[in-house]
Length: 190
Image (cartoon, rainbow, N blue to C red; front, side, top):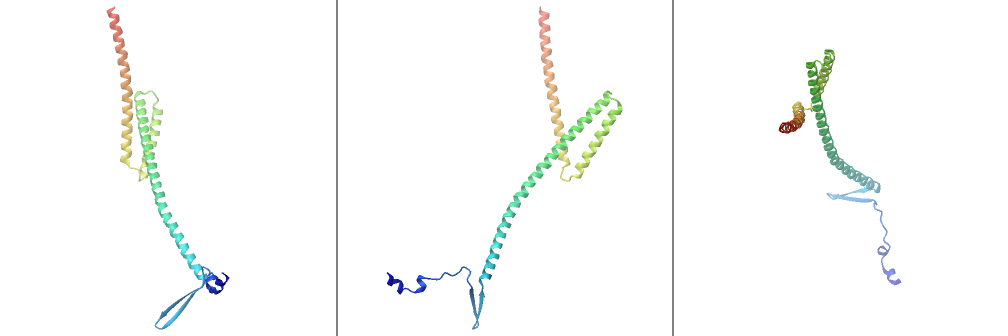
């Protein structure tokens, strides 16, 4: 076995490892002339680093581009929810303001409070109404028609609830009257 190693060429058994970034030569031949370009290991490392940095930057940019789309979409959804909540709040406030205005006018008709207090309440209600109109006029994303529709809907729901309450009260009074009539019939029969 020792004889075999002796006969083998040195390059085969003890081949020297070349470094990854060993110096390279590129030979260009044109019209009988040869040009040799030497690429040092330092230049190879710099070029590889630039390619790696460009790849990392491209991946990061692509990732942020995709992520920013979802972030923008989430923010748009939050804006829509906030706008809807604001419109709902404004409609509730306008409905409340109208109800207070109605109560003040009823108090004014009944004359149960002094006229100075009623006029004070009217003035406060008009100031609030003007502020609401000013806010809704300044905000371009608030649809006046949507606010009016919601106010009308809120008023209709309030009127429906009042009517249902009155209906229940009338049914209760009717039952009491029927009971009273039955008692009267029984007493008359006796």
